[in-house]
Image 1 (cartoon, rainbow, N blue to C red):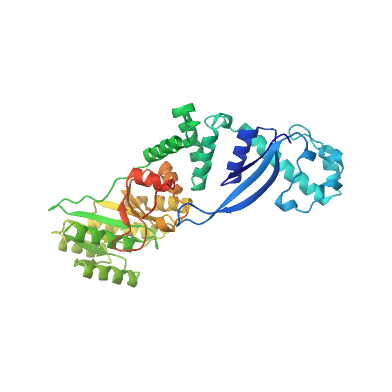
Image 2: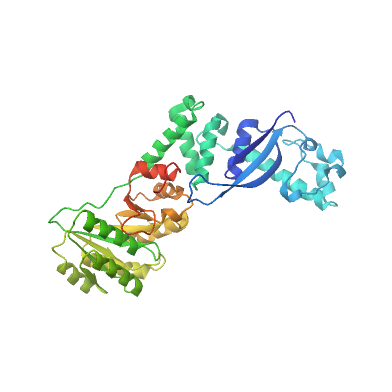
Length: 398
């Protein structure tokens, strides 16, 4: 080997991209392993990192391969003619013949062929531009985006757009590249900010969403802040009669901050409750958790909200759920005329890249973020710059 180097990234694909970028298609993989890396932010769990050792060469016999799942394989016992195939071009015919009588040799051949195929596929990728044209600094940024659970296609798109817009000036200035990337992420987001209340003009706001996302706690935080900080005349309505504990929890908060609270079970009762709260500037409605798969319950919810003549419907989503689950939930609650999103449990999420991926498919504005269970704290209006920094791991929750 004329040159041996070690590459680290958050995924096998990202590490192989670095190998391909620096060493080209003639790279030979010498070793691969997984490492546990501590995260910079204290609330994040340690991440598994992939380390690949690779070099430049042409023959398998020069590779001294040390894969974790072929430990103990005696390469010296293999005849040299079986290892003389070129990484790119030759068919390993002799190696294939011998593999029929040697399980160890067969396993080695399978692993080598897999690596060859991976390198060839990477050489064929043409996403926005060739990976050969991307500076090393941008490969590192790409690995960071994968590390925050951003979908690979979106991560590639951001990196190549960054290169196209700002070009070679990024090659020697990693900090500038990171700043520009933060700005790009900020521009991708759509944060609408807090609920706006006009005195003498009642606004009705409902919180909807699946069970366990923190609707009741979020309602309590909002109510406490509007009442105690802003001195807004307001009332509460709950239709979560399925969970007695949730009703009692909200009733306790209502008593502490001296708010009228109504419990309803039908559209008729909702209409009556809204009549009784007609003098309020703000009415917050806490709804029962509905499964995204239960279309009937979602339709019942829609009828209740219609009876309340709501002005805004905020869908509460827990970021501790996976991207696919979040997408399914948003689509299921679309019939409830959702106007914006409240993202909860940021403190329980390992990464926030799912927020950006959500925006690529569902362009609903984000109104609030919650970062813990403390009432009335641990809630903040969503804003693009703050959320962009959180997504990229460049700001702390508290």
